[in-house]
Image (cartoon, rainbow, N blue to C red; front, side, top):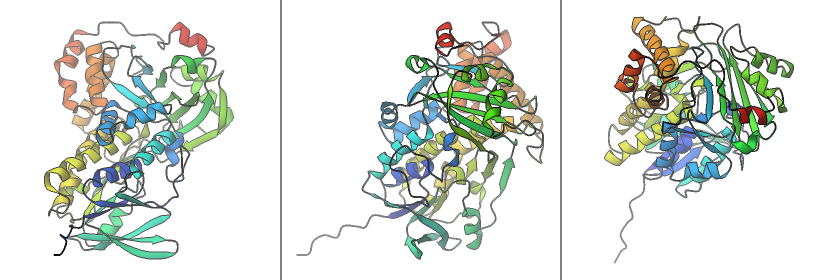
Length: 466
């Protein structure tokens, strides 16, 4: 008597071991055997790698992303915290000046907790968790060249590794290769119409330097300190001090066109002192620098509207920075990556990986978090001179003014702040800003007057040597 034949599991290929690629691979392993194709050789621990040049800059994960992290990989956030990351209460553990130059009060009334650590640590723990799954095979030092198939269905991807080119056949190919994605060219080669794109570029340059935490600030969980740029006063300049693991401060400064920070070490503190409030420069005055200044100019908001392609091919999905990139100041990239992976899982659990039209449903589902982050970023960056060929229309200008009012109201009222953070953290849609929690204090005024200076406590100032 012959033994029963075990049906073969579907096969999936994920291009790129970015955060978006790793989350996607973790989701797909529930439904298929996954091959993860990565151009780099991945580090063994929390170390920099060539494929993530922005990793040196300050990163944080909004509370909407924190929730998505643990829904995708239960315990992931706890693992990161156990290795030195922090869950920071926003705004209690944050000193922040809004773009309209209003200091937020340090309310403790909201539930929002943001994950703060170096990008190297986050990526290392995420890689470790995902690649421990035996259903996922990693192919490093391998470059995706082009897609196999037709405009109706993608059947595989051609890969070059070790001087040899081979084809990986799969029921689903996911491109998570980042802002340098070749997906638009690959799709056109298969006969798919050109994908519509939009770019809003505020011309922001980032400069980052790491410091040893001064005094005993590492012992008291020193707050994040943030001075946000004001688009209404170009050039917009801002910066953040991000206390991270290893008793370090990641200090990232930014400036738009004609106000960019330089990569010169001698000019770093001077630029910080020249912000609309000098608090960052004052705080780093007594901190010892670690290494050199690192700059980044690739900060444009760029979106490819794959969801609008009328006849999307089966077997292919694009995720992460390959779909949209955002000005890093808004901190939404990692949250979008995780929420997009959750959207994939929801679709696959309802219909299966090989059902006709699955790729189109996946692409559209992943668009929702992309669109939310895009609207938040572009609503502000479009106001910078030269950011876009198409100036903001009346509705966009109204929304920008409304958000300014919402920020000012939230700075002095805990209920309004909760509504604002629900939206900024990507936990709730922008309609939350029109709820009574926001509108009532907006109309009748904040409970407390504006703050004149950064709300650091006396103890925080003393431990920082100020």
